[in-house]
Image (tube, one colour):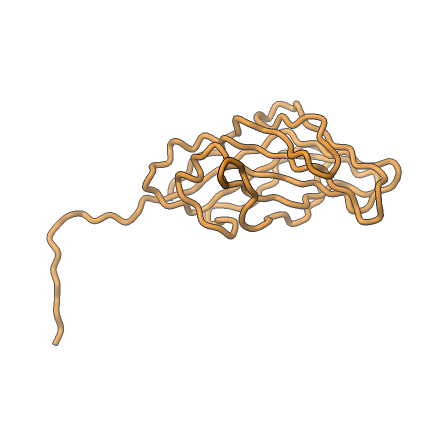
Length: 190
């Protein structure tokens, strides 16, 4: 099995949906230029950020006839814990659907509390396809990527702040079984 990565995205941003916005979404490099999202006193069911995403990862080194074995996503994030803490709510992969990316497969969030200082958290791995199938063309597509949704399940009027600095992806693959082109022996049993 071979791998390419970790690779950083060429594009990062946020999906403008109901939820608290990120003040920026610079996930392309681990440079401490972090996007921040403040979740304050809203309702008793917890509060969410908007989705933050990374796309356009360079996996051009994967041969076109390869078989994808696994995908690992690593989000570098941190958060305050002034009473509620920031947690992963959703961690999913993105795949092209027409002209847009859509979230596909399994949500690999374990609901982990974000640390107080920036650290990478890994999702998936060398044998994880995230509950769906992948072709090399899908991995190399500009719409391939990942998204993250933060939740603050318990909070007070002081609120919590989540920070995201970077995302990176590693992809594992192998070459398809090959036919050596040599003579074949057929044995018939009677």
